[in-house]
Image (tube, rainbow, N blue to C red):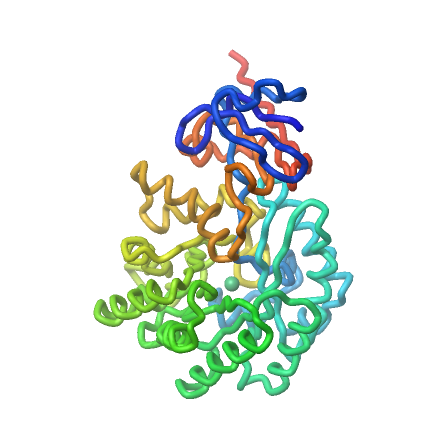
Amino acid sequence: MWALSGGRLPDGAAADVVVDGERIARVGAEAAAGVPEVLDCSDRLVLPAFVDGHVHLDKVLIRDELREHDGTLRGAIKAIHERKRRYSVEDVRGRARAVIEESVRQGTTRLRSHVDVDTIGKLVPLEGVLAAAAEDIAEVQTIAFPQEGLLRDPGAYELMEAALELGAHVVGGMPHWEADEAAQREHVRLCFDLAQRFDRDVDMHVDETDDGGVRTLEMVADEALKRGYTGRVTAGHVCSLAAADEEYAKRVIDKCARASISIAANPVTNLVLQGRGDRGLIRRGTTRIAELRAAGVNVLFGQDCVKDGFYPFGRGSMLEVALISAHAAHLTTHDDIAYALRAITDAPAQAMRLSDYGLAAGMRADLMVMTAGSWEEALRLQLPPESVWFKGRLVAENSVTSVIYH
Ligand SMILES: [Zn+2]
């Protein structure tokens, strides 16, 4: 048994956190009394480790090997095809592992990764990410993600079945990529069929376009409500919702709330992918975070991409993701900034249905200590965590030295 003593919790209160094995034993003032091994955390922030609820580990770090393209989603997907044909399990494993390690250094110990399942890469990306996901420093959920479509890519459905049998945890999808509305609806139906057959949750890429007429979010919400898949569905990106009219937006947000659908808004990537056709006033490409929040819909922020065909930056830092997302979504009040913390901690934990997440007795001891004394300062200063624990075990330490000479 050991303890962090006197650290500041996100609400500003000072408290001790006592760890017993893989779990938090208790949290509170003086809770560390009598504990033999105590780490003094006075005036430093103690947080539950971050959760990255939306990332693509199979594609990370391929940027330098791709041809340049027009910067759009379509351009990126096409530019990746050639590289995807050359994937090997070891290649994917090595790149995914590097980003898992970088994420752990930056305080993230649970990730949910989409992994392409299609007739180009077949099951190689999944085999690579599963091999990288050995549970020594972090826990990784995988999503079987048919990025090239299901109807557009004959054979992908059978590969999705094989991916779920191989160990993919969640059923992915990308209905807006299909040729027309009927095919989009069929794509959604097929994904939910798979999810029910294999008893898996659903986490789809939905409406990642500026075209307000693209409305597969409503198809997903209707399907979830019809099948009673409440609280088991996440929709990612949902960019077109920002471009749609108010009446549709209100109706579909209400359906998302009723179906307890989580929304993975990924402002970091969508800031650079969307709005490419705009001149003058360029849209941000971020979904309606304020309206979703007001309606009580669970919204998380994901890293999405790390140096791949879609996004040239990223370093597995959810602190950076929260800062960029706060800019994109106008999160500036104290309440807003607390909401940005929720979007990289409790919100993705809820979407992933983690039952043992958080700073409370009985929860898994995935923790970190930040140099800053408050969440707002941690977000502003962007320093890496001093220490990170996974299941009660120290898995990363960072130190930053800065000296000014007069
Ligand atoms: Zn994505």
